[in-house]
Amino acid sequence: MKIAYLLALCLFTKQSFCQQDKSPNIFIITTDGFRWQEIFNGADSTIMDNPRYVKDTALLKQMYWHKDTDERRKLLMPFIWKTLTKQGTIYGNRNYNNKVSVANPYRFSYAGYNEIFTGYADNAVITNSKKYNRNQTVLDFFYFLPEYKNNVAAFTSWNLFEYIFNKKESAIYLNSGYQTIAHDSLTATEILANGVQQHAVNNLLSTRNDMLTFVTAKEYIQTKHPKVVYIGFGETDEYAHSGKYDDYLQSAHLFDEYLAQLWYMVNKDPFYKNNTSFIITTDHGRGSKTNNWVRHDMFTKGSSNTWLLTLGPKFEARGEMKNNEEIFNDQLAQTIARLLGHEFTADHFVAEAISLQ
Image (tube, rainbow, N blue to C red; front, top):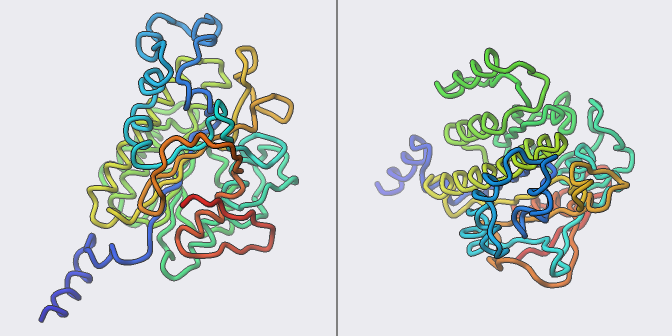
């Protein structure tokens, strides 16, 4: 009778503990072009005080300024510095010579995301053009494994992920830019989000508002329970290129809030609880000075400087790393595969995994 009862639970209860015992889940989350300086030091006073980049310096300082670095970074990103650093690990504070870097020489987004997801810093990826990626992603690799088939989903603000993930050939679920949300059982929230995108957005070819990306991803996660999830936010980079440091900081603060909500969500959902890990990073850095922070390219110093956060049962909680070491973004694809118990193989080079345990 007990066995029959357990089988019935597995068949009819979507969030059963039977599912918890299966293969682990992974969330990969990025925010585009967000500097390590703001992660570890908080708001930069030299940029805050420049009227070229901030409309209301007094208000911005009221929100995000404190003379103490530890307190200042908590104001900007409270979840990361009050919760994640106690339960996870954060890499990339160059004040201690702890470095995370891109391996590709170009230091722009297509090359950066290709590197993260394929494990290959492909020198042939030289522009952000709408060209289908020839390299295999770790997301596609997982899609074709029995335990993850039909359980890989990606949600991105930037619309070029259709090309980065080669949607022409890829089978993963992808909702990118202001693309209409489409699957077999839309919820009321998803229908509303479609309506907002269709009727309240002036330029559907632009980078999607991060809040819409977050709502779209969260709703799908709660109803479909994919096991491998990627969420790519984009507003930090958009506002930086526009020279709007106030909006850049506000987008970073909201990103921190999205992380907090996602972490809370997985820890109250039996399907994900105690079996889901987060990898959080960025695709490139940007200029390190007041006169070049808006840019990132192979000629701008600081553009290769990134950071990495890890959280969840597959990781040892080590807090803020202060040892002298350097890891690279192209190591993340194999790292993700190893965390889920697999070896990522492709018809191109794949960088070795990072030792994060």
